[in-house]
Amino acid sequence: MNNFNLVKSVNDLLVTEGLTLDEVAKRFKMKRKDIIFNMKREGFVFDKVEGYFIKEETLIKRIERLEEQQKEILELLSSTERKSLKIDSSVLQGDIIPRTFKLYKNTSEKFTKFCNEHRELKMQEIITVALEEFMKKHK
Image 1 (cartoon, rainbow, N blue to C red):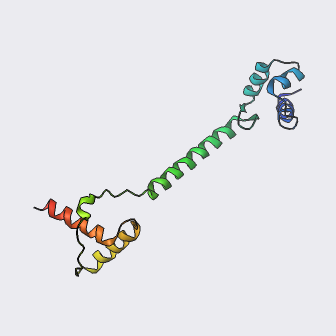
Image 2: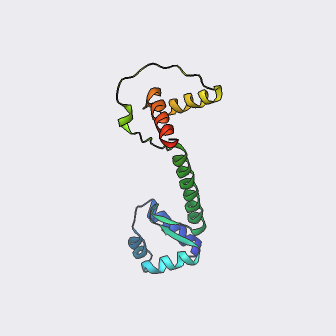
């Protein structure tokens, strides 16, 4: 039996009949390591996940594709991760009084977008913290 037929026969027994590699070796009156050696010589490796021999190049391509997908997933996760805002709750105590401020349009638009991205906080809380930090920084 040539090696191509051996690969096909071994894989058929592994997949369709559900035999183990040891059982396949017994059926061919070979040792398990001899089957593995012949397969490696032909460029095949045993894929433990799939349960049969595949071309080594195919396995390498699958691994490379999985690594690429993993990179893409990590990039997506890092771009969607939001930094949690750390707010000193002591500045959010006391009476709330209404105030009216004039803002430049571009600042107002950025502020509204920021507030929409951080719905866990009220606008008044964000303004309060921003003003407190600004005053503290510029004493």
